[in-house]
Length: 119
Image 1 (cartoon, one colour):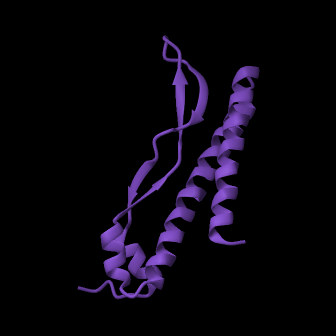
Image 2 (image 1 turned 30 degrees about the vertical axis):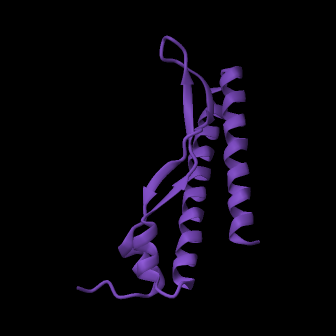
């Protein structure tokens, strides 16, 4: 599978786990709720890592990897948000409509690309 196909699969995993969480919430099933929450957290971390990997691969393939990462600087990824009632109680979990943004770690990229991190 390509990175994009894997990214799509991880996105689907996030939406599936949100659905499982909401179903467990409606049934008031604490065990299933906790399992879905852990699975969702894992799925979101895998998605974020895949987005970073795609960028790293693109940077390494460019003529100037350091310039590429410094120019791009950030990447976006998806996450969830909780919908709460007037009492502050979570009534539903949804895909966050606003993409989250993270900064690329220059040192981690240099290690990944085999570039020097010495001063």
